[in-house]
Amino acid sequence: MLNKKKTMEQISMEKEEAERRDLQKMLAQDSGSHHPTTSNTATPLPQEKAHIPENSNHPGRRLIIKRKFSNGEHGYYYREEVISRPEVIDAYLKIKETAEKTNKRYIIDNLDEEQKDEVRKERRRLQEQLRRLNKAQERERQKEKKLRKAAKEKAPINMKCGACGETGHMKTNKHCRYYGKSGGAVSEDQFLSDELSGLFNQELSTSMVKVEDTKIRIGRALLQRVDEANQKAAQKKAEHQRQLETAMADEKADVKLDVSKPDVKSDVKPSAAKKRKLMENADKKIAIKTHKALNKEHLDYLEPKVKGSNRSRVHPEVELRSFFEDVISKMKEIPTTQAFHKPVSAKEIPDYYSLISNPMDLQTMKNHCANNYYQSREDFMEHLQQIYKNSTIYNGKDSPYTKAAELMVTMCTDLFSSNEARLKTLEETINPAANKSTQNQFNLILLSSVEAMFKVPLSFAFHIPVNAKYAPDYYQIVSTPMDLSTLKKNIEKNKYKSRSEFLKDVGLIFENSKNYNGETSQYTLKADELVSTSKSILAENSTVLQQYETLLSSEAASDPSF
Image (tube, rainbow, N blue to C red; front, side, top):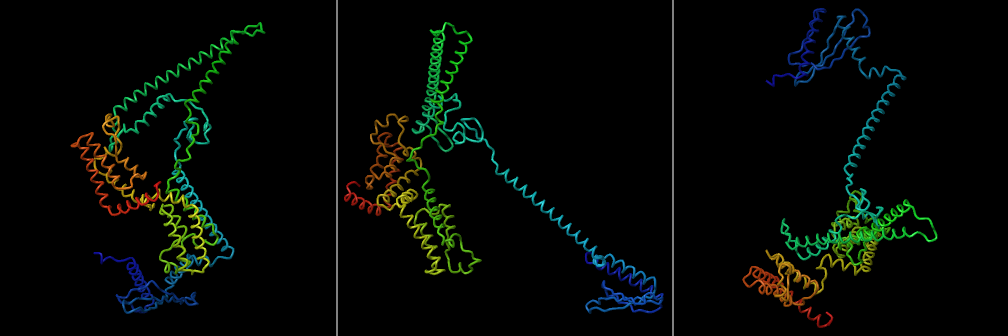
């Protein structure tokens, strides 16, 4: 069914062929002349040429039409038709004239210069109008994009200052009008918060609150202490109120005495209005003194706190990263090092990456600093030396670029030397294994043993010292307590110089549990498992530990202060 369907081109060709046959019959009837017809296989092409003689107005005029036909695979052939009937000739001429006049090129070619200028101006006006519309639409799109971005970045201001009560900042903000000053109102629960803050700081340090997975266990003793704190706070508040009332009564009595005693030099007694005014002034003075006293006593949180000079201000990794970034910035300030500021462009130097297998530059080093890649000076210097090495391979040893790279290496070495003590402390803090001393290496193995004991299941009873509130008689029975946290602190203090000293303290955990809980207690069995775990770790590193013990003993013999 689909194969029998005809295309639009075939239908148009058939219509044209039918019209041609009708026209041929009409011409045959008028002129009586015989013209050869085409075969059924011939397909007419939509191409025809009409030749009109110059004497077209003559009564015997003729119209010659030349048609091109396709004969399948055999190619094309042409055929001429001569039309002598005036009506048909006029129809052909009218159709051709109408088609030419409707053509845009024909219309433009027949315009004069002034009309052509008008057409050009109109075209330019339309193009300019279209350009302005596109530009306005683009501005609207950019404006909407900025508004969406601003609305996305804008964060709601929910903070409220505890000193002045305004929104948008906190009481620690320097722009607050009460910053560093005493002011504001005292909270009603000030006394209770003072009591509870000290209580919780004290009780949390003694493990009165335990966290097990998603459960929080609070001891009954802690709740009793909270009730006691509430009572103390109420008593303190009542005592404070009595003191204020006493002070106000004394002030009023003094004022009454002053008012009742008239001036000796004056015979005029004070009127009732004057007495009332003096009493109001006295009440105002008492209120001001009371407010100042309360602010001075309870609003000390508004005063700037003095921070200790020995506190750790930044993380060691952040401090080391900041130092390396400063070094890179100083190297970039050298005028001749601009070639090493960013990676080499493969478009500008096509053969660079074929010769250099490990490229490096200052921008890449700065990105490594941001990711905390450099944990020591050796890591940083390795990449800097790589820049010098790459320049030597590609540019040559005597090149100005290589000399600039060598200058960077020299500057970096000088900066490292001038900050030797600071950098060494930071590296040892970040990576304790960086300290290659004998004592530190010995301590690392002991710490691995302690960490293994921490990981023993259900050993939490030995992680921290025993709380005397849970076991009041523990320290009466156990004279030398020991736990894993104490072991770790002793290692950090370089207390142990041999395995025997360390194992002696580890054995105390087992002995203390056996003396207090009994030999068959679950705690004692778990303590025995801890001792076995520690001995197994030390046995795995017995050879290395033996060497360290020998070195430590020799150092102790040569240096009495060791």
